[in-house]
Length: 324
Image (cartoon, rainbow, N blue to C red; front, side):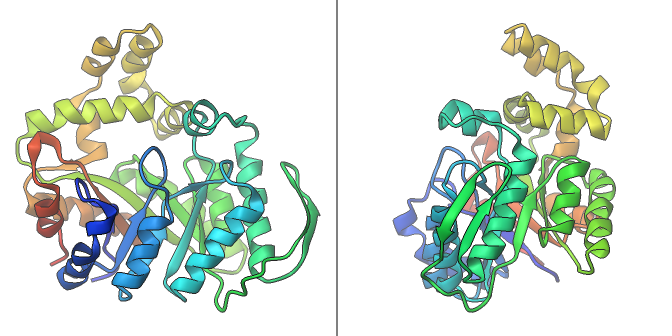
């Protein structure tokens, strides 16, 4: 078995109560825990707890937005976690979206590609311990030196959707974090990352955050999954991603109704076939078979995000989805 990750925090469990759950993840055979940062906990705190409570696990964040922390503060957070879990932390960085950056945090969502690229470059310099005095295209750092020396620089993975960011992930990052795509889509996305990495003389890791609901009630899962799909795929960066992947015709009805303000019609316009491609559901055995299809297509590390649709117990789902 390769790597097998679980998204944290676990559903319905307070962070203060995660110690035993982290220990159980180790016992179940999970190799990684992956946090995220949107509207729940921040991306670093769940991993800091895992660093102390489950030192066997690799820790990753998918992702921290490049816009929402100043460069120096971001470097401090990355260095602190790398120091707490030497050799076991993977930093995930991405542009995020206009919703999170601009609407929720009041920060202009401008030149996301350049901001992500500049932040990767700055982190490389800062984590090496050098004094950074640099005018990047999207920000300037004047004389910052990280006071915490990191024994081993963490890999930096870049959240990527379309070719420009995918190439950046391979060329300047250590790989890519991908999500909201089918197993077959991985065969389109992964080679772009690997080709860019090979051109830079290195290898690249592909981490996929995959949405999974081990519930055989397909009708219920599809109905609830359409809310999640609409919430994401109407965000401009994801809409363009799926147009590029070739789903434009099947999703145009959803986009049109959403733009007209008819949310009910937008949900109804999402084809079941799209749900079945983007959300893994069915029996636990069927879900694990579907997850393995992603690995066969080029995913190195699946990071499972449990969707508790239909009232399933998210903790039992974690147990049911454990690697064989």
